[in-house]
Image (cartoon, rainbow, N blue to C red; front, top):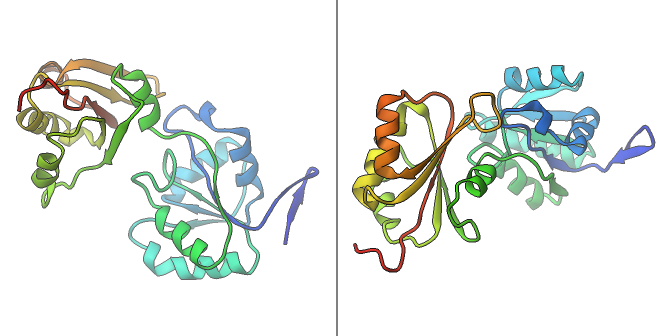
Amino acid sequence: MTHFKNNVYLCPMLYIVPTPVGNLEDITLRALKVLREADLILAEDTRTSGLLLKHFDIHRPMLAYHKFNEHQTVARIVERLQAGETAAVVSDAGTPGISDPGFLIAREAIRAGVEVTCLPGATAFVPALVSSGLPCDKFCFEGFLPQKKGRQTRLSQLADEPRTMVFYESPHRLLKSLQQFAEVFGSERPVAVCRELSKIHEEVVRGTLADAIAHFAENAPRGEFVVILGGKEKTEKP
C-alpha cells in the first residue's frame, strides 16, 4: 500500500533515517516526513528516540531494534515489510549502520526483495573529518576498534596506512587509545580529536598525538569523540 498524507506519500519500503548527533536542528525535513508517516519506527533505544519524536510532536509506533535483539527480530520485521508496511530505522544518533544497528535489517530486506533507501543526513565522522584540517579526499573509516582481542593487530595493520584514518572512541578509553596510537604511529603524527560535535560544548583539539595526549591528561575527557588521525606520509620514517 501507499501512504498518502497532505498530498505527499511514502512508498512501502525500509527507510534508513539519520538523526542528529547533537543539535536537533540538524534533522532534515525529509527525515521528519518519513518519521511522521512510517507504519513503524525501529529504534536503537526507544527512550532516546522517544525524546526526539516528542520534541517534533511525532506519534508513531516504535519497536526496539538493537545489537542485542536484531538477529531475533529481523525476520519478523522483514515479513511486515513484505506485507506492504513502511518502516524507518533510527539509531540513537547519526546514520544507522555506521557503527550502529542497521546493516542487518538492510541486508535482509534487500534479500527479501524489499526496497531500501537511506536518507542523507547527520553522521559524526563527516564534520569531524572535514573540519580536522587533515586530507579528506581519501580516508579510512575504522569506527570503534576492538577493545581487547585483535586491537593491537589492527593497529599494526594500519601503521603504514597513507590515508587519513577515522576512529570513534568513548571518553573512558580516549587517553589510553591516544597513547596506543603514539606507540604505533609515532607521537608526532598529526591528529584532530573532536568532542561533542554540534553540541554546546563542541571542541576540536588539533596538533600532534603528543599534543592531544598532554591536553587530555590535564583535561578529563567527557562526551563522545571522533579521532581523525593523519596517514603515513611518503617521507615518514618507520
